[in-house]
Length: 348
Image 1: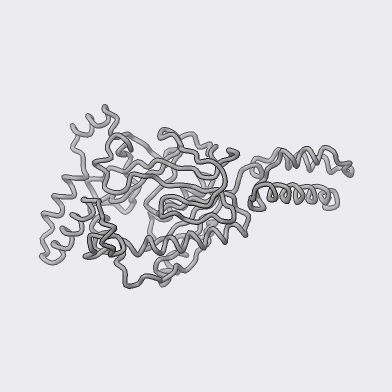
Image 2 (image 1 turned 180 degrees about the vertical axis):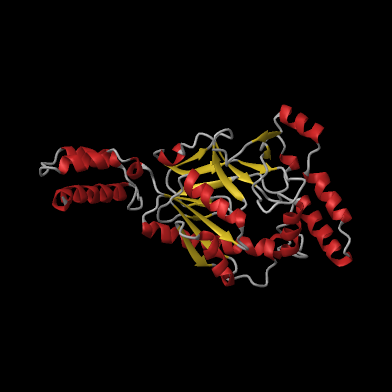
């Protein structure tokens, strides 16, 4: 049987070389149209035709290989749920995790188990920078490293998201990764409305502020995230996009594939985030030419730091609930106006 496969392997290698010469693709690009034409012209040994037919009809082989890269800290139950969502429901083939604190390796391994995750020690550059800016410096280094790794491993697509973000496509088809001549896919992001109670599962919210309808109420960014088709020369362009790719940009419709962002899903998670960020300056990277314009972020810094000093959390809690939680009547009205919508990425 192996001898029967030799002509097939030679033909696939030839097709890959031709494709790379015209327009670089990783070795697992699986552009089967030219390969099938060449296979049909071969005189194959007895029994090989059945094998070739099975391979040609295999959906797994036809599906482009897609990976996620992320930088993570303090993994828990929600991290495991995040992994399973993408590996099982989104048909992501692999996740590359860079530990922001390599001393947490044993904890990461416990939550990862035998999932197809490559766990790596993250860079420790920018130690003197405050966490809200330092993370972006480290993310850029990690994404750059992941691009090189995944190219050598034969992956075709890379999506950079955080562990408080979910890729969600209601149809489950993920047809964007199968489109020819596309170099970059840009996804709109919707933002989770925080819960009025604490929970260990940070993905429990099913209400989302709709991008384009209620951005003024967003707690964080509103400019989406991107996936890139890997090729030599690709590099990150900040945490939201890439540059150096070949092909067109596909803007995914907001009612199709989107990113669901859970920046502060509960009061406790909000407090933990801004305790970690500390008393940061009002400038990204401490650069006075790069002011932080997210007023919710700046006010959150001030109130959490104030509460940590005084021990009185009443003002901080009141601020969080006032800006984040929707009362029943306001929720009904926002749903009717399309400012928020109900989405359940974990629905079966």
